[in-house]
Image 1: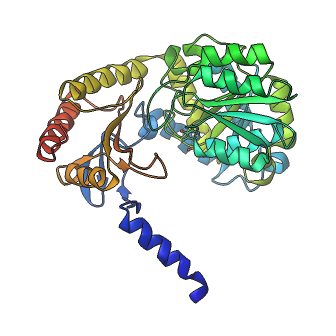
Image 2: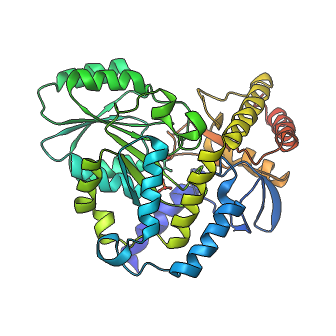
Length: 391
Ligand SMILES: *Cc1c(COP(=O)(O)O)cnc(C)c1O
C-alpha cells in the first residue's frame, strides 16, 4: 500500500489549500431550477446557455432516433459507426457555420486532441494564448510540438513572438473564442491579420461562442465577419447546444484529412444516435429563430449591470460568463456555500482551473432564467457580499 501513499498526501494538500473539488449531484433535468444534493436551487453553474438541455424537440428527436437506430453505435466511425444521422449533422453544421465541411467527434475535448497533432509536430511551432483551454494544451502536448505562449488576448505580444519565429515553416496560432473563466472574447480580427502577414495557420476554439455570439448563435467567426479567413474552427455541442459532442469546421480538404488521421475518430466509438439526433434538432431550432440567443443577451445585460452597480468586480467579461472575482480560494468556496444554503447554485472556481489567488464564483447566465430568478440571485449576492465584506 505504501507505494500509493503519495495519493493521500496530494489529496490532503488539496483539502488544506481549499482546492478539493466537491462534486454536487444533480437529480433530474437541467434548467433554471435544478435539484442538487436533494435541494431545489436556482442554477447559475451550467453551460446551458439557451436552455436547450431539456428541450422538447431535442428530446423527441432523441427518442425517435433510439427507436430507429437503437442505443449504441457498436463501432468507431471508420468501421461501422457512421449512421445517416452523423452525415446529416455534419452537413447541417457546415451550412449553419457557413463552411465547406465539418467532422464531428465525441466531445470538444476530443476534437482538439484529434486536430492539433495532425496539423503540427516537432519541427513546427504553436502560438497559444496563455489562457487557452486545457484541451488545447493537451492537444499540443500530444503533438509534441513547441509551444510559444503569448499574453492573454494580446495581439502585440503575439506579433512580437511570431516575428522571432518567422522563418519556421509551419506556424499555428490557437485561441479560445470566448475564454471560459474570464468571459472575454479573443481579438480574432487582429489575430487573423497577423496570421495572414506571417502565413500562419489559424485555429479558434469556439466552445463558449457557439450559440452565443454571431447571428443566431453562429459563433465568433460570424460575430467578427471573418468567414473564410480562419482555417480551423473547433465547436462543441456540449454547451449552448445542450447535448454532447464536438466538431471541427473548415474546408473539405481539412475534414477529409481528419477522417483519415484524427485518432479519436479512428479509435474511439461514435457518438450515439440519440445524441446526434438531438444535435440536429438544435441546429434546426437555431436556424429557425434567434429568440433564445436574444433572451440570453438580455439576461446577461440585466444581471451584469446590477452586479456592477452593487460594487462586485466582474472582471473583463463581454459574454454571459460572469466571474465574480473574490481572490482567495477558501473565501470563494465559503461564499458559494452560503449561496447554496440560500438556494442559489453558483460554483466557486480555484486553482488549477484559474491562476492561484484569482479564485472566483462563476455565474453562467441562461435564456432559461426569468428576470425574477436573476433578481433573487442578485439579492442573495448582495446580502452575502456585504456580510463577508466583499462589497
Ligand atoms: C468546454 C470546452 C471544451 C470541451 O468541450 P467538451 O465538448 O465539453 O469536451 C473545449 N474547449 C473549450 C474552450 C471549452 O470551453
